[in-house]
Amino acid sequence: MSKPISHIGLEHLDDLALGSVFLATGGGGDPYVPKLITAEAIKRFGPVELLPPNEVDDDAFIATIGSVGAPTVSLELLPSVEEAARTLDAFEKFVGRKIDAVASFEIGGGNSVIPICAAAAKGVPVIDGDGMGRALPEAQMMSYPIGGVKPTPALAYDYAGNVSTFRTDTTETYERHIRAFSMAAGGMITAAEHPMTGRQLKDTVIPGTVSFSVALGRLLREKRGQADTLEAPLKALFGGSIYGDCQLIYMGKVTDKTTRIIGGFDVGEATIEDFNGQAEPLLVNIKNEYLLARQGERIRATVPDLITIVDYETGTPINAERLRYGQRVAVFATGCPEFYRSDAALKVVAPRVFGFDVDYVPLEEL
Image (tube, rainbow, N blue to C red; front, top):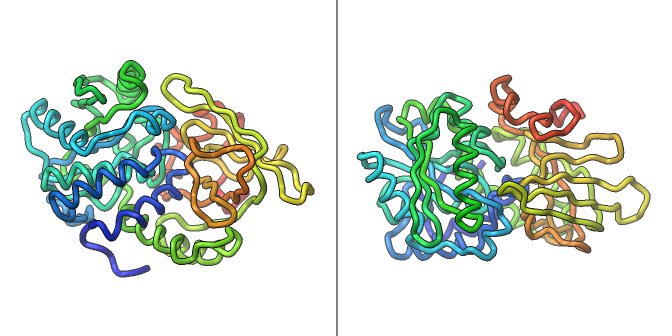
């Protein structure tokens, strides 16, 4: 691993966005526009301190921030430079307390850079970590509530500047309410939620994922080329991380892809056929993220492990909303952080939670 970074500046944004899309397993929102507005925020306010979780004061006040909605909408309902900071301003007024640092919901695409945009404008650090170590579609799937952090009081801000506040008894109730507001507000909103102490953060965050995304993005940029040439360097990088194994499981052409917005999520599936027509097609199920990869009756990878689809020629990871018929792609599978293999986490992220009639089997055992 390269030397840890102490801040996020303009020089890190391209690599952060690229690496986080790989980890996002198709979800988290396209990072292109959020990256541009984050670059503008850094130009205005300066680089953002990247704070390791173990250096956070136990009594610090932390909030998480990001986008909630269907990622396809993010290609049309564009955020502004001020939106994330205004969300935090309104949140501080709502809870009556200033935040000391911000953290990510998920290390996923656009949601990896939105907290940095907010932190730059507010002049506070951003935590080197997130609540998933990947992207997942629902609030109760974050490590914070799995570890006992309540999601509310929370606040959501829509594209027109309307604000809605939330106080709920469970994370599942909060997920229904925030999703309903998102749908009513055009399909995508910015939310500040999961207020917690520094001690709670240390106990629940998936650590080091922002700096790891930068390192991963740098590798993808420097080794840019056919996907099969990336397998060895990716194995080496992931092997020394909290993730573990990374495998190239399939290469082929997208022959079908359908998604619909259902209940505030992009839901559907993609079919990838082997270049030579000799192997069975790979079917990938989608709910914002790539959740299950199956060849016939054989399971190749499944949530909470990571499934990433990349452009075959360049190795560039592809968000689910940008996956198209005719694309030549490769599919990587990567082990999830150990936290998500715990019984408490599998209760909310195992394949059966998503309606798949299979049990979770770790990638290295498949």
